[in-house]
Length: 339
Ligand code: ZN
Image 1 (cartoon, rainbow, N blue to C red):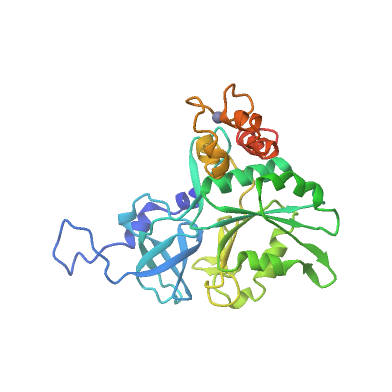
Image 2: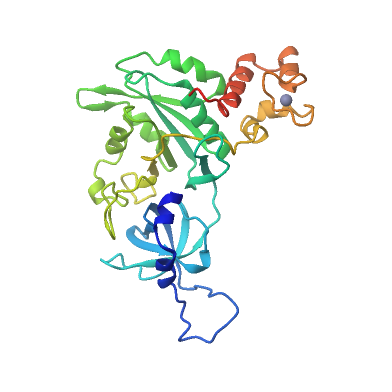
């Protein structure tokens, strides 16, 4: 996404934002933009933002006062200017609302620069095939770490259950309490979609998964009438079809966003987690967090810590050893290199 923004020339952004200097007295205050309207960013393509305003899709660029502040898929924004959505019409994003969540990643674990991938989503759906390709626990663990760190609820979506029994994989995640749904390929498409739809209803969910796991098939099945829905995959941007690898937010059928949103993430192949702090990760597990109150300063709560409260809680029989073990597996996945 940062790359996409960079491709868009700074001078272009400025050209679109000359806030009424000729008609208003010069003032030190920034314009108040009383006439701004609310919208949600559904995708970013070469510095141009597709924004849904009152159920219709418009195009916008960042206004100058935002400076270098990033605007990403899922951002709730305020826009001014031509919000007609007509051909060639271009509005300006003048404000980014406070983000309820941010899903971040670094390019890899040694990369100090973290990038926000998606804002404002409340659920991270980790799409994994049970076979063909084989599930990779390291990748699942890392996605879970990203979800917990972002304050998003995780959901495992296990596809291709017609090829393998989900139990083996589920046993690994049961102690963490990660909810799951299972889908299988049936004669008339995908079986098990109903339960997934229930889990997605009314929420904003990021779908994460590697090629071959069936994520695209799921997205197409969930948003079947995409041609007429807001935020269609083939959304025509001001410069042609959506071609970027930026996250793409799609309204679930019915209600233009009220029914919930799914956010596809076509461009995400790696998930650097250099930004994740152990103390932040454990906050996603309040029962475990409580047991670390007397940990020595700087304790990472990992298995090699000499005086970690988690070990003491297990020894006292107050903590489920499997749950502690699973948490520590996530902790290790944070810096694993063999995923
Ligand atoms: Zn500890």
